[in-house]
Figure (spheres, rainbow, N blue to C red):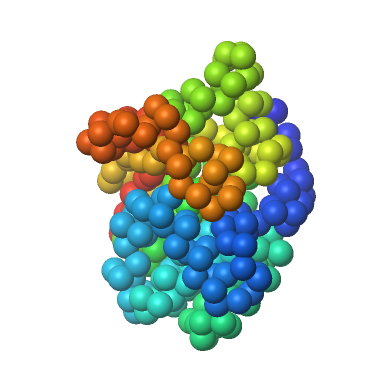
Length: 278
């Protein structure tokens, strides 16, 4: 992991500014209500576990800090549920789209957008004490995730909740990436970083075992309640890019019960529910 730690935050920012996450989830004009509706529908169709993980309705009247909001799909749903949301992202382009999204749906007064580095959150957010710190698929893209977790710990209220997703090292996706890379297991970190996202060449992508994710969170001072995995992307990429949902042959005939069991053992998303001890 040392080679990834040597990457610069500026490189990460440049990567996500060039193509914000999920920005191509709809062919409609960016900024239109139809575009944002399709982005949300597509995201939750292929990642249906997210709403239950975020548990939007539980945060009504609470302060939510979202670290890495992207173009704001989860952000909007926290706000719709009645939370006071602070949405942070390293990518200025992602924040621009997210702000526009909030305006389109009349949610701007419920969301404070902040352009900041996850490793330096407290300098941008001096008034901490959030009931929920939520970060889905973000800290594994920063050169020093342990710094980001330490910052989140400082901003969580005593008794506050952390909901974190990082990528799972022992997942079907890592296996597939390494297999496409001619089985070069010794190049796993490099291959995963190159192929972890829709746009190839992500500067930093860490993966974690369950034990490593637990250690990351506990070292920062949180108390872990649960660690689990979910999500295998079953669709053929060529069709998916054309907004068609055609499963790969090896998943097409697999019973749903078997597929769900596989997701729970080899899913790409490693999720942690934790809290800051009161």
